[in-house]
Image 1 (cartoon, rainbow, N blue to C red):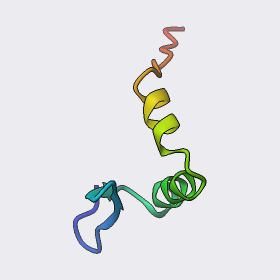
Image 2 (image 1 turned 120 degrees about the horizontal axis):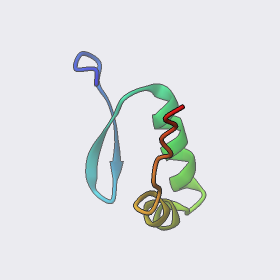
Image 3 (image 1 turned 180 degrees about the horizontal axis):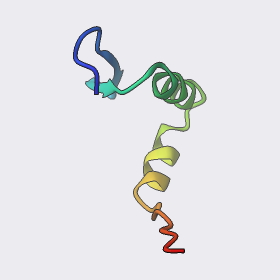
Length: 53
């Protein structure tokens, strides 16, 4: 996570750090389209797939 020129976005009155402009743009789009609750609900249920090939 960058420290100098740090990016952040206020989500539900809490400043959240962003790692890059891409993640900032995605979260802004989610919020603007009133999808934050759905995003947060789905985010907690996502399990990464590990390929051991």
